Length: 283
Ligand code: C2E
Ligand code: MG
Ligand code: MG
Ligand code: MG
Image (tube, rainbow, N blue to C red; front, side):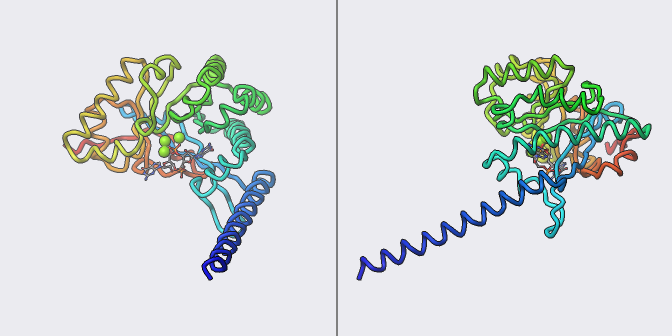
């Protein structure tokens, strides 16, 4: 009868639901284990000053050296970390690993450039990021001016008063603040001005729009003009071609980051990317 099949259907979905739940709990346990057992590693991608060709900073990007699945990219585990709250432990660990890495490079006499760290909205809303930073900086004896913080526009949405206080505290330590993925979220111009960011990183969607001449360029130029008026430097994310660099230079963009310069690299490979870059003109 209709009633029986309805029941069967119900049971079917119920089991599927439980399977999905079990799989998710397993993945969560696995990620928690990874955080506690040093399976997370940081890779570093340079950001280069267009006019001088020098590396102004490197961005720390987390990877999971999974024991059986190989090296996993953030998209495969950051969303789960966000949903489960594991991002709080993961985020504190990332901050500590970056400070430890800077101390290690310094000890080896390597050239140091600041490192930017991605901090998620939940970290800002649920932990004292300024305190976590100062604890790790002190533990590894690292100069706060070697650290920069990247946050997306969505981080500024939540309880804006608390977030603003946290950001001010971080900035007072000498740490620069960067807006990440600009153009994909909903930050208002007044928020940008009020929070006094140092650097605006324009999402790679706008960079990939550059080669098609016309409107893409006009829009990017408008962002640059606005950022400069607010006292911010501008970084183009996702730069993959020399043509894009040429256009960005003509638009007065300050810095570039992307596969054209370098993919994110393990810490042992970062030294060769620090020398000066030369961008030949294609015109
Ligand atoms: P994001 O902060 O915007 O980082 C830039 C992403 O774009 C990185 O991906 C980088 O490898 C990639 N990328 C760089 N240049 C190019 C390019 O020329 N072309 C293309 N197609 N892609 C490029 P990744 O490492 O997979 O990281 C993805 C996102 O995961 C990051 O976006 C960031 O939001 C998040 N993430 C990474 N590490 C951390 C972390 O330690 N903590 C937190 N909370 N989030 C992180
Ligand atoms: Mg970033
Ligand atoms: Mg970004
Ligand atoms: Mg991005």
